[in-house]
Length: 303
Ligand SMILES: Nc1nc2c(c(=O)[nH]1)N[C@H]1C(S)=C(S)[C@@H](COP(=O)(O)O)O[C@H]1N2
Ligand SMILES: [Mo]
Picture 1 (cartoon, rainbow, N blue to C red):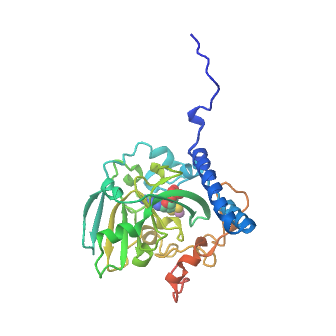
Picture 2 (cartoon, rainbow, N blue to C red; picture 1 turned 120 degrees about the vertical axis):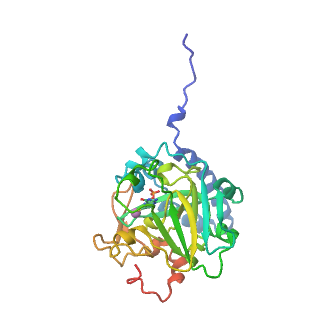
Picture 3 (cartoon, helix red, strand yellow; picture 1 turned 180 degrees about the vertical axis):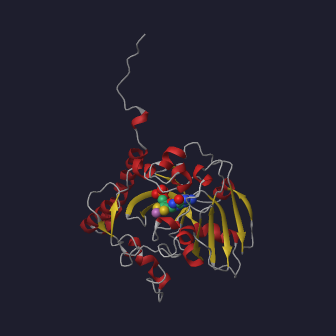
């Protein structure tokens, strides 16, 4: 027999985005109220402007327009090919110049961390950008727990190498595994985030589950996905795209509208979901927080 139900929104039509935005508009209302006590009109206007500029990119775009060559080189390949990727159990090796090396279970690492929400601009060297509501914790919290030695000047990040689970690793589009690196002060910077989720949900495989990094003032290729090893080194580590094309991709890769890539101008970017291109900001808009790391450095040479 037919059971008549009250009309309702099927759960398949409730996007993570709408759940997240519901919760955020509540939080925003609370913080507007707090601002209004201090500065009635100014506070409201300023808060609105910042929020408009940082409106998160849609969940659908963040999870269907990806660079993750282990799962294919097309933007939609990772969302199509990474679905069955198993992210538990997962070990992270801490190695190199460090007092507490070891193979740590990811869940044990996560147990000791407070997960925060951070809305970050994400700028790919190819000229597109997004705004992503990540969840995660500062890399520096993990670094201080494992205690690097005084010889540690850089940190190397290595992605999983498992051709049985990452189909494109059976081919030669890049040398595998994908490796990246940061200078120690960059790794310790409070903006540098170990990411475990987005839009308040567990991180989708195509975005680097179960653990990826995001360094928001640098081009996206610095932010390795599916991390299995964090190694502290005295010397600057290799980074994959620099090995493949050293004249196109440097070690630093700081977002810089005045230093062009040989094939693309970096002065503007296309924010995914917007029609007109917008100017790219120095250090991706985080200059007030990170410019001092590079005082006196020639950013044209150290691109
Ligand atoms: N392991 C791995 N990490 C990677 C990549 C990759 O191909 N493999 N691509 C990088 C590039 S070029 C970018 S722009 C970002 C894309 O992250 P997103 O798909 O979450 O937006 O991941 C970076 N991390
Ligand atoms: Mo990228």
